[in-house]
Length: 177
Ligand SMILES: [Mg+2]
Ligand SMILES: [Zn+2]
Image 1 (cartoon, protein in one colour):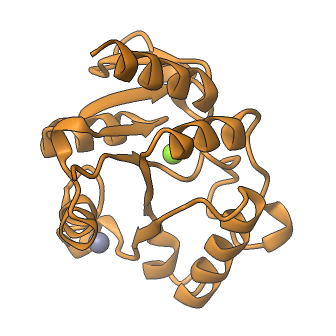
Image 2 (tube, helix red, strand yellow):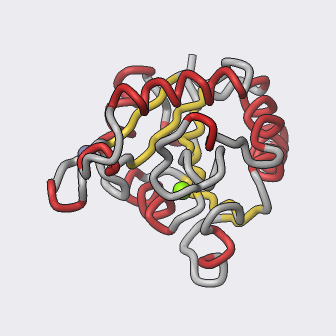
């Protein structure tokens, strides 16, 4: 059985990007995020969040806070996320997991036995798009978060308003193949 996945950026894609989220009360789902992710889940996609959290490496908040935030985000979405991965490093650490490097995707592919040819990467920054290109996975830009700023010069395969529009396109595409 092939395992298909959608690799999702967190800030600006699923929740509002508040620039180094460090308070639980600042977690706000973006419009249509829950609807989009639910549709993908119901169509058999694993939902995998891959997020750069350099605020940990910079000392702005702890790993424990990030884990707690992820539990809360997942419960706001109806407990449908299969796995959260985060990079705690700063750009100066030169790690292998900070997007657009593919460390988090490589790990998820191993953990969940994902077939990347049937998978997608979705995000609001060009580093998310480059992540998809580096991993050999179709990248899609959403216009939420920073997406509006880059939509005219992006290397993304497709651009959509929000996660629900992306999900409808992915699922429609799936049915016609
Ligand atoms: Mg983002
Ligand atoms: Zn890292």
